Image (cartoon, rainbow, N blue to C red; front, side, top):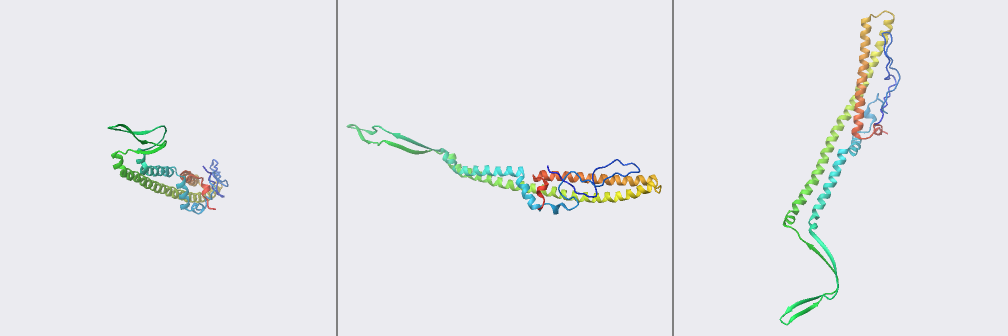
Length: 251
């Protein structure tokens, strides 16, 4: 699984425990995963979807399995055309010595002739009526199985593409939501800093200070949830495509 480095210059994901007079610091560290810029649209950084889909289809175990089924059915179809030959047998013998064809006549045995010495070759064929009459049906059945395997592969590929489209769109949406959450947290942090200064100078009562602190914590929580959702979609997308995400970057 690849690492997905989120390049965020103004925010990090390390967090200190906040006291009433000290804001949690989330200032300048980069996160743990992805070699793409999280502040930019991922669709512009990755290969076009059709290219990604071709890679994913080629890597898919389900599609590869259907390819092997097609090969098997195609072989069965070809074998069905020559299956009748399994009833045929060939032989080769060698004859030697004095071999005569003898016929019995009223005058006694009579040698009709000699059979020349040498090899004897031949083919014997015994075909049952079932094999003879059912041959065309067996061929049609084998061909239908082969065609069904082709259709089955097409169905599997379409289902796979539908799932890939869903995960791809979820990934892009999760990245955009995280970007909005980061902006929201930055705004909450700015309000927090002003409120912190007012609290220290005594210009803000504890109730308002608590409300501002809670709003900032909620913004932090929203960012972490959005980040987790993005990472989940990244790993799911990588698993589905079958290659690390950095290999799908535009060059």
